[in-house]
Image (cartoon, rainbow, N blue to C red):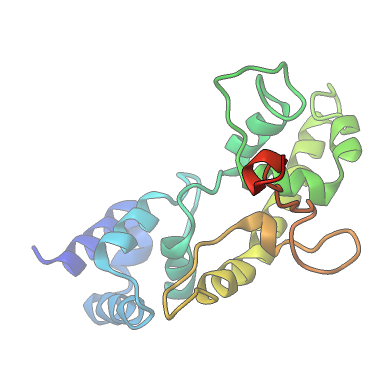
Length: 196
């Protein structure tokens, strides 16, 4: 079985009734479109398997290509929620063994730390709605940063592709792009400069 046949099998296994109705030519065209978009068969397989179980329809070729290019370290909403409100998270009890993703930190800064802290995500009556709104905000945040991610990667140095840093691409409170922290260069100690 060749690599693209495995992709077709994964599509068929994940969404049997929908993909079976496509026919062989449509599946071949789907695979050709993914390949034209620079997606390898292995990346397409990973992207297919990353689709949530509740997804009723297969993603389009552009959607699957975007999933294949997605940063694997980018947390899902459930992971982000834990990193915000769970133990060791932004608002949880501090623990040394928990690392909060830069994506989550950027999201918290973008939404406002105080707003998120006061959001009643565990409320008996409205908690589910608040979590749903938070999920929507998270998805919008990720969608807004997809284009910035690709632009940052394309801005590599010396003919090389760059690495994406989500904190550098987010707009600051004043509307400009770039990090919010000031970088201060350390000056060598006087004795290291030859001054006694």
